[in-house]
Image 1: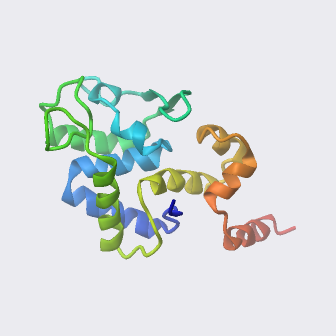
Image 2: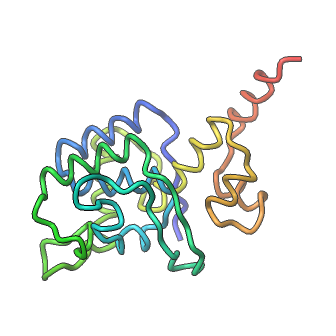
Length: 189
């Protein structure tokens, strides 16, 4: 299995958003859900319209039972995610509540494939100059990395990612020496 990395540069993260937003609202929303939720791609692809849109506006929360762990997960729709849901709904106003959110153009009401999602994300990263390996799992890692950078406790990040231990979360996030250096500078006793 290839090791993928989070997007650690905020300008690059915004560039990926901008690229996808201009190219395809469905793919942009998929990326926004991925970096806003810490869900695995298998759970993202199974989302239905009614899990993010109540018919008039974005829902307050997204709730899923994770495929890998079987655990229930609920998270609020952030303002940035709500904005992307509204943009998506304006472009696809005829989607039915029970439809898959990220439908493929092939077949009737079938979600896009993991392979398509990976290819789309790799293309977006290539287009904005990201050289580290990034794929669908990188969205989840990006959420965890930025939660850490914003000072969220590793204990809470561990819970959000449904990891067994904080040690697992530390390895998962690939906390870099420069992150550790920044911690020392912040303490500055």
